[in-house]
Length: 581
Ligand SMILES: [Zn+2]
Image (cartoon, rainbow, N blue to C red; front, side, top):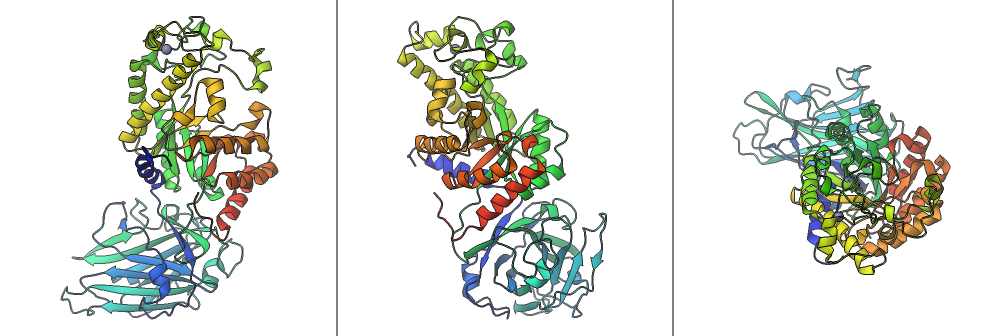
């Protein structure tokens, strides 16, 4: 990485990965675990503790726990150290209502379907209540099977203090659990029933502690449901099974982005859930602020990151901009994009001048409005470029154009402001004039990106396939952009190309940005049959392990979704672990 904006990227990268739904990786135990309530095994030293617990609403809680997990061929191992000033417990009969005492609770939805999940509650006397739920309480098909038992379950509790002395001078209690896979995957729709799920599998899990304070029951959980109940598996944390030995650093999961039209009413919690199950990690949402907020909210509920799609220099129907004709980009023929009879190619091409200071301030205000939507994690600038000086060749016949030389009616921005700032009458063939315009687009991009970052959110851009092509085609040399990420639109059919071309674009773009920010190549879904998609994605991940994006949600048919799911399951299961690049 180049110095300069490294720290900003690191900070922004953290923000980009922050999701409302917590996640964890469960790694393989390499030495035996003796279930005695004493956490002196190597496994417990090496396993990473889960992220801090919260109250059910997601707020801070005065109670917490150090929870860790690992597994082997027979058991899922769990340990919890629970700080407690007063140890107290009375229930000694299995399957009592254990949360009437202070307790520790584990929830597992092995198939991540919200159905057929398991619950285990344990108190300080090591009394357990284990039950099987067909669906959450209060929802259709709910049955809670209280006399169901986890066969072969081993639990142990140790106390760091004195039980029931009421002194308030206790320290903590410790729980150690070996939960046979037989009772977890035996009931699920996962392959390898009765064994650990295949590496890469994501189960939904939650952990809870109940404490009674002055007669009031207090719930502290790992994954806040933001409901009155923990029985909402769709809000539980994601636990990925890893083939790596406990303590191995894990490569972050690849980003799988999906462009979504936020105002499409057919996008529901169900569709978003299906995308998440197929491996989509990030929604890139277009539309009105309301549409962006609605779909982003669905994405957050499914544990995804959300990126709002911001139309930058092309602002069709922007009333505030339309009231300022001098803000608009002007062609080499002196005609302005403000004039409806002079818009290049399509009527929605309403490009603003990138070097106009008022335009930059206007874009900053508009970007910050979108970035302020609470459910939005990051912003993606779209159309951060000039109109197409050169269209992709496959599109020339559509417009009846030969664009092998620069056509003045498509060459922008020759507005009075740009000419004045450039300092002399420009000529289309002058290299320094081209250079000046490349910089003016880059400066506009960086001006907006800086403002969004200052507001605490990362900012990236959807760009043309490589900085070199973008510079030639739309005056967008995005290697000069200071971004947190870029989505190069490698839409092969637009260029009359295929997968090999995508891979060469990826390689060229990676070189050009030189590690300054990650790229997530964008694929046009209609370019691929499901089988072609299944063949192409692993090659793209090999070339760019950070991930990729898919355009757009209406192209993600059930067949392509199934192909994606298989690819991502395999990608995450790859062993041994590759170090991050
Ligand atoms: Zn201009």
